[in-house]
Image (cartoon, rainbow, N blue to C red):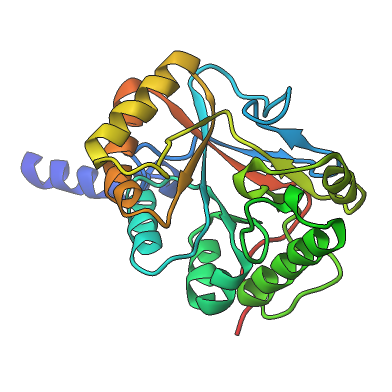
Length: 260
C-alpha cells in the first residue's frame, strides 16, 4: 500500500470517529444565550425601576424582555434577529393582541422564548381602575394568552409571569398576584422606545445605559418599528462588548406548545 493511500485511509478513519458532540455548534460565533435562569414566581417582585430588588445577575449579564405584542411585522422582525444570534428573550403579551394573532404567539414559544402576561387591554394604568375591574382585566389577559399559546386556559396561567402596563401597580394588586403565585417583573433599564427616535439614537441610548449599569433586565417593545430595526445592531453590540444573555423561565413549568 502506497504512503499516499495509507494517509488517505487514516484520514477517513479519523473523520469517521470524531464525536458528534465535538461538531461545531450552530450558534458558534453568535451571541447566544449563556444560561437559563429558573425563577420561582410566587412572591417575586423584581426590577429596580419599580422594586428594591432584581434578578441575581452577574456583571455583564442581561435579560431581554419585550412588551405589548404580538404585532404583525415588527414582532417577526425581532424574532428573526433573535434567532440569527441564537438569543432567547421574554415576551410580555397583551391578551387582545395574542387573541388576534395566535399563530405569532405559538411561534414565539416554538422558537424557545418565554411568554408572560401584560393584561388584556393594556390600561394606563391598572392601579387607576377599580380593583375588581383591574383584576378582571388581568385574569382575562391570562386566559387570552394561554388559549392563543396552548389552545386552552386553566385556572392558573401556564407561565406565572406578569408585568404591569406602565408599571402601574398598587399594593392591593401586588398582593392579589402574590396570592395567585404570579411573579411581577419591572425592569432595570429601558430603551425609552415609546419616544420617537431613530434606531441609531435608540441604540446609542440603550447601550449607554447598559454600560453604566453593567447588567440588568432590559425593557423593549416589539410593537415599535424603531426597536425592530435596531435589534440586530443591538445584539451585535452586546456580542462585541462581551455581554451575556440570560433567559428566564418559570421553575418547574413546561412551556412548549401543545401539538395540534
